[in-house]
Image 1 (cartoon, helix red, strand yellow):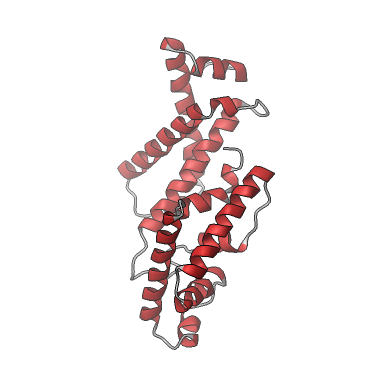
Image 2: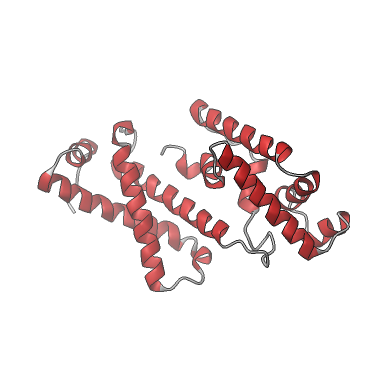
Length: 221
């Protein structure tokens, strides 16, 4: 893998033939290393995956990052090394994939803690500190969530979701306060999340889109 300046990377990736092909191979190598480093630091999220599944996960992330890097070449301002800038796309793609995996694996038998609702709770309780463009996107995301919470969820669903996801209260405590069983509360929260996702989708958002808006790894992507 040869050493390239920032200008070399941009020029070669925008070229064609063997010049571009070599740059693409080297870029893939950089993105694969960034992905591996990120995933190794989050080993607990990969429990249950065998080696073949982990390799496929890495390949999917790298492929997604490659597409994003090539689509955003014109936005690279040269304020950092190109490989550092490109690596953030791999980190962003990896973080998004882990979140998607956790949301896909939610079941009625899982407690909200098992479903890792903490990330949604963190989103609902943190305002974020970014530049004006990113803050504007966050404000739009906030408006979408607030509208969905107040217009598409029942009072009981909203109360259960906020208590468990945002306030982090124990399931037993919330069940007692709502005069219901824990199993019924799991179903109530599951239905609330489903309604929230449908409402956000109807207004052009997904849960992953909103979480990505507040993801520090995506701040410069």
